[in-house]
Length: 569
Image 1 (cartoon, rainbow, N blue to C red):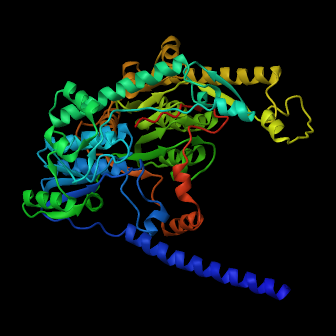
Image 2 (spheres, rainbow, N blue to C red):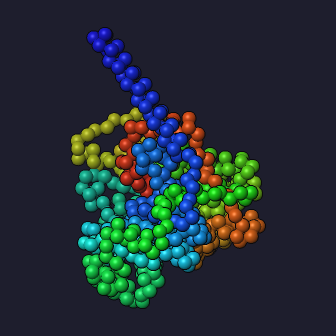
Image 3 (cartoon, rainbow, N blue to C red):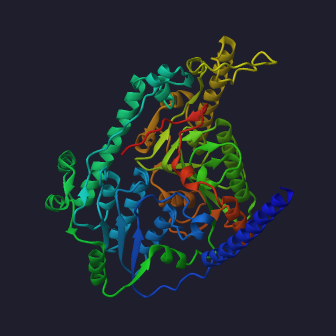
């Protein structure tokens, strides 16, 4: 037996060494490819870009993705490249592939704006889809496609602009049946993140908030399609009520320009571009020359639930991870300002306070901070944003949710139903306050209520100070209510409607620069060298990354500053 065990572990050791070596060689080769010299651009180009699926906020520099060839340009890289193309006389046309997409409506608005700037510059734009929805809505994809000059769709596809819907599950009936009692405390009425567990239907405040959000987003949706397709807004609403359409029907009513396959659309674009060489947008972006002798702006991305400590960027916002990135920008004497691209429904209150402090330190050192919200910057996300010099959002960005919530599921009834008994032994009056086996007693509840009162007042005071608002003004927009970006702008929670381009304009203003002054954007934290890259690869190898990317929650239970999980389709 001993000999067997020694041999077994020897084999395991050899396999581990071999695997590490293979990963090291492959990883280093991938890294060398990743940092290779930028390709040389031809004198005339037809740019192609893939807008299908989801564009991540930060882009694809994940070691696993790069190793297996799945690295992809992020939202900001695409936006910056499209804006460069609008000013580049060598670009003859831009062709995009698209589907129903899941970028988020605010991200779609930002991409639409970039396409509009291409068209204003006289660059022909064409987009092709196999279908705008198949067995599901194609609202977001078509809304984005409508910004292009010419829309193609494959035969057999659908234009499923069937209108926006919002669905929320309510589990209270099930929890009552199995003996789970949710205990939740919140500040205030619109802080509805846990209503899915505590109610059987939306409360009046929740219903009011959701209907207002849906009304605003639907108006934005209809206005965008009407403008892009030169249709009357009332006509668009009639078309929505008649959808989904076959390709031939969509062609008849003016929602499509051509029916054909992608190779046919690309051939038509090539013919119109007069023999221009086809270049992928990622390659074009890699070949762009960075601004020389320009003020340096640290571009920091933060996406996902806010959690304490250090976590991989792809799995949320770790307070220590983001604090370190901001601290490096503070310590780097070459950095003049910071642009934080934020997309978060909130999470831990303590983690949010840690990050907000890092922003305060940057501003105190004379380094302006601008926050550009993408799809969501609510609750803890807005707590962070409120400390910046300027806040920008798109009309469809969900933001605000100035409030706090906490609670726990009490499982005593479940254990009784399952005939499971628990024994406990404690020292300290409130040693059982966090136990899921019993409800809060009167004293424990009073203590938790005081904690929520303190956090809520702290949250409101932070917003009042950061936004220069009176406490009464903050109270009027607080109470946990989520606003669209347009609503938030009207109430003083946001300084300007726009995205990356407009945020850079705000930074120029804060730095006292001319409106067209060049800026050097530098990703923070800076890209890792080969050793750090390989170590990251080895750490990530074997993880179930697909599962982690799919499971996204509004906040842990108990969470203190989470926005309700609102998803509009």
